[in-house]
Image (cartoon, rainbow, N blue to C red):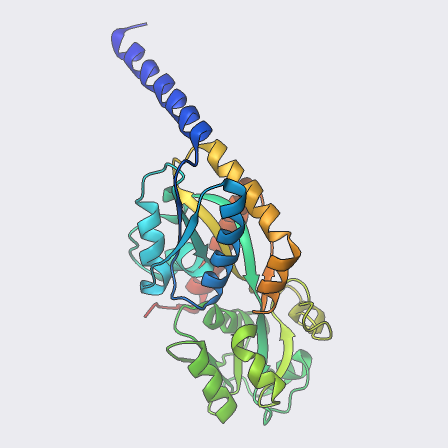
Length: 323
């Protein structure tokens, strides 16, 4: 073996030894969990529920650091460029991880290369709601109306390229109609205009829509996830209600910078799954219209690749452009 090969092999061995040593001593100080959105939203609620439990199980303070901006990309980018030592985690979401790679021509990070998936953490329930003036009491009736009036209906969203916008484009593609998209600067303004009758349809997060549903100012037709929500057991999924295969999960999940030692990734994944299985955490999230879930790092990585491919196709087919 020549000297260059020996130096390379020595470097590899030292890196492995260092990685094992770091993992064995981790954590010996506080851990930062970046929530890439403002306080009070689903990512923040999920981050704080998980951080509280990890603080206990890891024996060190896990501090939530809200770093909002650029639709979540600023916080994710900060995490991606942090040292891969286990002391920086981020609560990634569907937008900056799976949607933006196809939506934007340039990103400051590569979600598949610069981040290490740890575990899915939660899914915010999305619900299809319509204005009461629209004579649709079910998804099948809405489909019939949309096909009879393929260019007359409009739907609001929290912004171009957001999950609720793409939900409408997925509906258009599957039903073969062309509802008009009306973007707003957030889910709340979209819901206000739906209640006013200025748009007819919104694929809203349940947390945004709950008050309007309970006051009968909008009509809920179905949840957009893969299963019914325990808080609304009589509301069917889109698949059950007549649009088989329609699924939009506004998910959250934990990531670390790429290169973080595998032992640390595995430990955080295990402790996160334990935290999310606890009844008080599940109730805390459910009260906000969020379903606690978890996965292995490998399972989460597979899910992310599938979501990236799915939404990339929707974006390209509908020629969606980001704001």
